[in-house]
Amino acid sequence: MRALLRIATIAVSGAALYYAGLLNSIIIQRPERPGAIVVVLAIGAALAAMPLALAGRGEGDASSPPARVGAHRAVWLFICVMATVSLAWLWSMPRQHSEDWTPYHNDAIALNDCSARSLLAGQDPYATLDIFDCYRRFEIGADRTTPLRRGDFADVTVYPTDEQLDRTWIARERDDGNVEFVTRPSYPALSFVLLVPFVALGLDTNYVYLGCLLAAIAIIVWQSGAGLRPFVLTALLGASCLVAFTVGGSADLLYALPLVAAWIWRDRLVGAVLFGAACAVKQIAWFFAPFWFIAAVATLGWRAALRHTLLAAAVFVGTNLPFILWHPADWLAGVLTPLVEPMFPRGAGIVFLATNGGWQLLSSNAYLVLEVAAMAVCLVVAWRTRRSSPEIGVALAIIPLYFAWRSLFSYFFLVPLFAFAGLVRLPMCELIAQHAQDCGALTLFALPAKLRAVARGERAA
Image 1 (cartoon, one colour):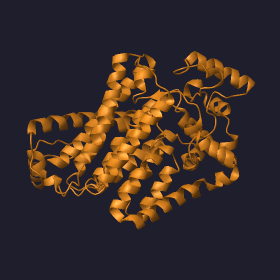
Image 2 (cartoon, helix red, strand yellow; image 1 turned 90 degrees about the vertical axis):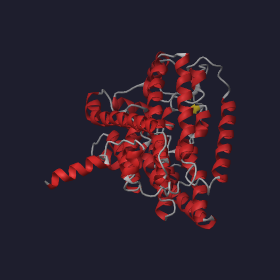
Image 3 (cartoon, helix red, strand yellow; image 1 turned 180 degrees about the vertical axis):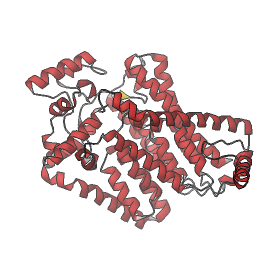
């Protein structure tokens, strides 16, 4: 059954990303060449599989006859097992964050929180935020920063050691003159503006990010057909990278929620507003812009797609305009930080083979060429299939980053969420419970048809 096969493909890809992410974090601490190859291949396979799951128009896929029942049942059993892994991560979140010595697992979470506090104090974070004051407040240090290839780190090839980071951090904190650490907000304004009410209430923003994930999952499940909902929900949890790495600490869900809604509702004005909001949270959403436009053209036509694009751009500009007018140079420097600052090679894409796998590290320009070439190929595919595969673009948008100089794992673990946003737009028709049972599909959230009949009979008695 093609509908369930599409769902299962995305879920298994998410499970592969889960294990790749765990191995990636282990190898960063203890480099191992075979392990690096496994990470890169697993992520590459997952990124390649999800566009295939969205290929075609999906018409009537839920009513197609089943095939290879045994294999299908085994895959869905695996998905159900991985769904329990996600539920375990959700269950552990309060304990994990109460026992963890700090909720600020990376500089994105810490700087966004400090930026919100700065704004509450009437200051422009782009102009006034000081990373040393911020980290002193949270009692965290150099291991939660983004170092730059200059100053003390100018001659470092791959990445500074913990000792180098700590030594330079202590020196800069004491004597000032920081040039080695990203110190200002490096994202558009909504990355911290949206957090202001939660920070004002003293809430742990990690729960805000988890709430964004759960809201995105709820939207996707709601948009799926009634018969498919139990399988979509099971598969979303089966793609265990989503819950695990959100609970582990990720600010990316703040852009992911509006992006999911924007893709699903791209034929409405609210979709354009939400896409503009996503772009005003984090630059990663910018990679989706040409694919969102292509999909809008296929759905609405050129004129309406242009109107929606202009509306999205207006939302981005409007939400950032106060900071642009406040300190234009500081805002521009902050937003362009990922593009213009000399950052170290880092990530789980092909650059991981060089940074942690012992392969030859190419120049940053070589990785840029590969990234641009991959983007060109993905755009050509999205354009040429805009009518035959209208949802494929949402799974293609992040693929170029796999080839980038900076290809952090956080760029990839949300791709299954975006793929499901495309999947639920496909007109796969309604799934009949008997068809799902005949093809061996399993779910945590719906009983097989015979057991439901027995349950109904017992209740009636």
